[in-house]
Amino acid sequence: MSNITNINQSLTVYSNKTDRELLIENVKKWTVLDEKIRIINEKAKHIRDMKTKLTRDIHSYIKTNNITTNIGISDGELRVFDRKDYQPLTFAYIEKCLSEIINDKSQVEFIIKYLKDKREVSTTPDIKRISTKL
Image 1 (cartoon, rainbow, N blue to C red):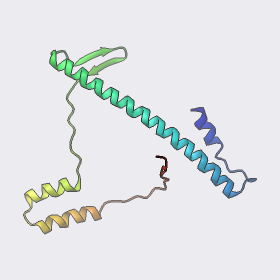
Image 2: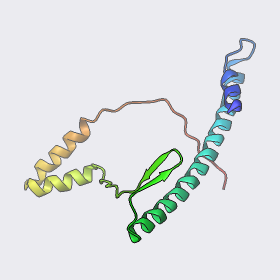
Image 3: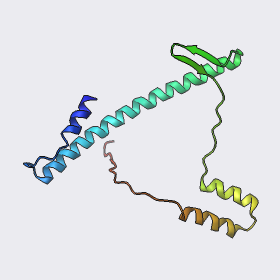
Image 4: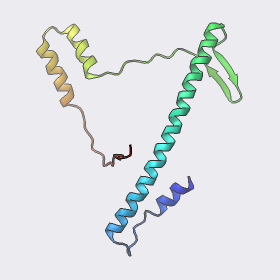
């Protein structure tokens, strides 16, 4: 983490450097940070995958052996339960449901278009890395 702090502190604009030199320096720092984030995300994904597998194994064992759904651990307890995950409200899903209760296809299309047109849109400055490595 100290590297990130050092990089943040060095983003200060120095008057003896040209704008172009500052831009080049900031781009280099940005790519270093982007690479660190990519590595951290890969590690986090691997940890999440391992945790998901262990969750399935623990859940299966508890269901198979009719064990209580609370397991005491050093700093509290684990509660084992079946979580409900709902399908997201996509426009395709909304259109399908509306079609079931509104017979007029043009009315359904009007409602979907209205909902799409009324969405709030925000714009955020961003940079996207396009990697050319194969």
